[in-house]
Length: 345
Image (cartoon, rainbow, N blue to C red; front, top):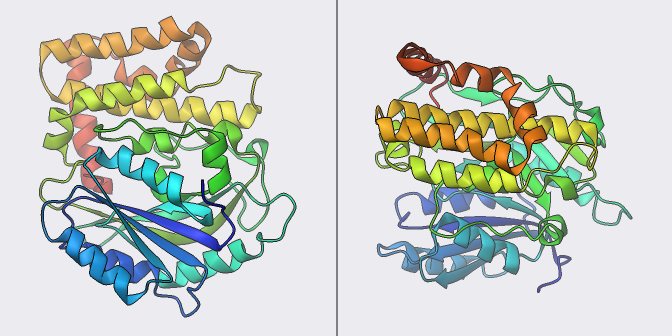
């Protein structure tokens, strides 16, 4: 296992057939004047287009900063696993190859991270804002966390305020200390979509300190054809969301085993993912999927009655379980209204 001392930050870039976007992504990760302590680790996950050659060319231009690992296809989770295992940075951030980061935000983040290098108890996790950068949408939706945590100071979980119904920390908002991910034995399922939910959840009991930097670092590029978050694609792959939900339930700690603030947030986020999976099961209009939705909620009760009870008490959970065809109609209408306002798909 490589030591996490030679670099301050490793960007892990899972890459599969992304030759149209990879160069833009990598350029953004190295755009600040002092990038000597940044590592960019491109994980080519069995690409069949021009991505392998492009990645090698980019790496050859900055060999002290950029590395490429070529592997047989293991899916997004398998590529992230490879990145965690091989990162040399003290901190680690996953950036998908069709996304990018803002230079001003990156400089600010690096300035703060460098201050952690020599601390006895460095920050375990950084949180930043992120942008839904949707194709054709002039007004970009920025997800901010200034209402739930104070910026630029060391926090623990009990310092966090209550998150809004649609406010949660996904992969795009998070930078983990690499050793935290390794201590948590974070290992994502291979050949499974939507594992970013697990990545943004399973390591949290190992996070003892966090810091919020109120800057829109991550630009989440959405709206291209075939993207995994398009509504029709998510309906076809809804079984993957169900599989992810089961993994999240298994990773949920019981109340009183972790700080109250952490438990409260994890229940909130588990409710959100449960609702997301349920929405797409409902949007499918497939009666078999309606039964799978019921099984999803029944599984939570079978694993832990107390966790299931706390998840069901959340407002989104109550709304998604409105009974019968009228309830499903309300859910479909609510989804389309939210999608038009935020533009998350």
